[in-house]
Amino acid sequence: MLARVKASKKKLEAAHKDLDQSDGATPSMKSPSAQARENTTVSKATSSQYLDRGRMLINRYKRQQGLPQDYDDFSATEFVAWLISNKPDLKSSTWRVYRQAAYHTLMGKPDPDIDVALDMLDNDIVEGDEASGKRSGKQDRLAKRTSAMKEKKFPKAEMDMVFAYLQYKSRSKMAPILRDWLEATVHTGLRPVEWRATAFQSYQDPKTKRRYCWLYVLNAKATNARGNGVVRTLDLSELPSPIMNAVARMSSRGLEWHEEGRFDNVKSQVGQLLYTIGEDIFPRRKKHFSLYSCRHQFVANMKSVLEPAEVSALSGHVVTRTAREFYGRAQSAWGIDDIGPHARPIAEEVATVQQSADFYEARIENLKLAGVLHGNTNSEFPS
Image (cartoon, rainbow, N blue to C red; front, side, top):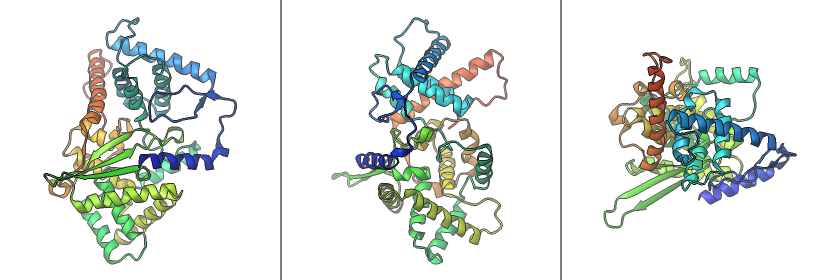
């Protein structure tokens, strides 16, 4: 399934090859990561700057961890976990430079876990950049105003009203698709764009007859228009069959739309239908529901039943500062009975997030000890 995703992406890239603006650059260093983007370029000057910045970051890591500056046998994965723990306090533009610097520097390090370290960087996400590309100040302000008008939660009662409308009143041919999109997303937390690159797997144990289901998601990675991040895994085995079936349908449809080059068009139609229904049902609401509202609600729900690192792993290793304010809060969560059986992350992905959280908390405590931060500082790692 994922091979089809990669093939369709290459097809779309070929169709827009005239948009490439890398004339005169040299091929970038090949990453050992199986998920790394191919045929990328970087100038010699930029590569040199990345390496200088990478060495600076490694030296800072050694200093903070009490390692000798001439000690080169440090763990690449531990360094990346430390680097990610710094992300909440950095501007997105600074983080992109740090991430690339680490990538270029680590590619030359002889480490048995180098693939894992680079995959951790591949798995990183810049939140809220799905549109990618540069925007003018006016466009950026407009985008913020538009975002401010979107609801960052989707209460159960309101969602049930939308479902009833879709079933009994709407005549749109997109109504069944919108229902599946909402149902699947509020139980998996996928970003709208991520439905174009998923794989659903189901297995029934022949002895126990128990059904196991997993959803594999190619993490949306918006920096520099890249969308080929590594896979995160959601264990959906405990979800009721109707919800799992909705997830399976969305996974299949999203890939099909993506391969046909019409995913964005379908997403736009479905989003517009939701907006229209919202205006009809909730004419006095100041904020309207969007497809992204379901992701907010999923995160809020999971915050009420899972540990922070588990929530981060499920939602795609989200560790940016905006995640503190941007995502649904636990107090917006549905009731336990309404949440019911829910998705769970796999232990390996949780451990990766937890390691970064540990580094973050240790740094905050050291800064407080040094008198740089005060007692009211939020020391919770954003998730």
